[in-house]
Image: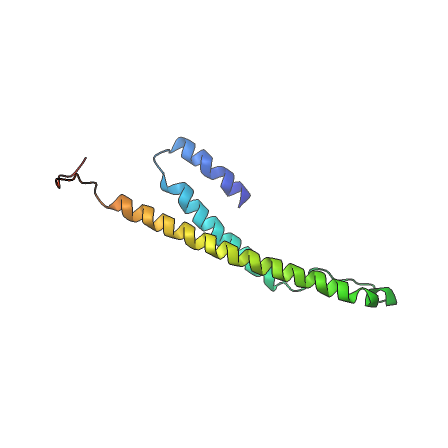
Length: 112
């Protein structure tokens, strides 16, 4: 995502008429980021201690709290990214529909 995010401005440097590319890239990258966050959310526990001594048992509650916080953070991140994705998709579709309509003057004559 980071490398492709750096390539997009370079492409627009050589193809400035591609005004649709930044909006399309934001939409696609946000969708990919949502998928990565969803996958990360399903991974399970983020903190796991492998030592089986009594000290680990004492810290089990703290480990559960950290893992719960990670899951909650990823769930909030997914929700925010889905909203951003939908907004970017809506903007992209609005841009596409406004570019497909021919520009007309107030008297009905078409502009070139």
